[in-house]
Length: 195
Image (cartoon, rainbow, N blue to C red; front, side, top):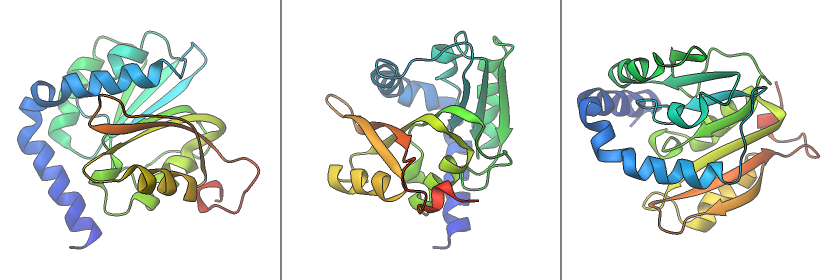
């Protein structure tokens, strides 16, 4: 299946199931957010990207703390639900876009969250490279990887091979691995740090 066909299939699946997303996934997503936010702090100077934001569940955790939050998702229907949730906050902005080709400038986000994203993309390396492109060099990048899609070793290798330094990796009691990472500053040979 071509990359675009896989993306279209994911988009259509989330469009069809958007109305029950929170019922199906909120508890697991909340558990992942709590794990990550015990390690990563958000403050008023932070610009946050929620890549693959779904219905915007993360907004409830970070919107009151951050300067700006950008939620990005490929599913129009799921993003319409995120819009309802974002309406409570002045600093949340939404973009309908593909996480592999974001319409965003490079080096602008201090924090990037990509929960339940990379297993839904045709090429996780391309997705991580795009995430790295928009992250500033001091960013915290939080990535989750579904255990049924990745072994722990494969998940760690994927992150490290795309120029991420893992500072914490948690998975106890979760269906996913949750990695808190920073860009590798010393080795600028990784594609993710290049223009």
